[in-house]
Image (cartoon, helix red, strand yellow):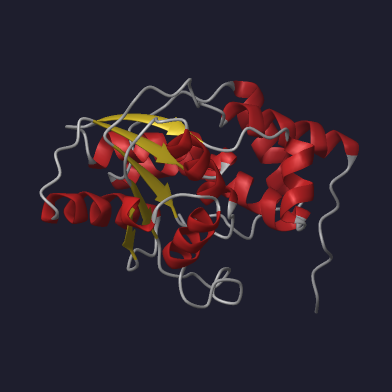
Length: 222
């Protein structure tokens, strides 16, 4: 028996916008020691890193990420490697990029990047953490928990929700991931992987309606 594909009605799109807005915790970037670009299916992470590098925000970029089931076909040689190549096409010097090609989740992205920077003898005070737009709040909370001795600021491409959906070209994938990232805001602290954060009632209500509509493929098991 097959399951019908969820439909993003106008009301559910409004709920999605509520979640999208909740996850936007970027700030005007300050000069930092290094950028860490979190691997994913979205080359916009590398594009954002290249833009901020050219603006002089940081002198060095770490791209971190191996593969996941959703990226192996698109980036068969690995997320971090593909990010590096994309950033180089955008004018970032190869010597300004370090690749961390082993991490398979965000916790490993942070841990392995920290160890890699330590192995290079690099002193880090402020990290610019670059992710997909809807991953900002979660990655910030995880960084604060897993690397508490270093300051962090978050960045991503600044796109409206509609433009981001068009850029990715797979609405259900994005909706499922935004719903999944929202769940992680309250689930990850229980597992010791993120600091706790408040979630307004309107965000929780929007999340529950999108779950009830079937956008659940990226939910964590309780």
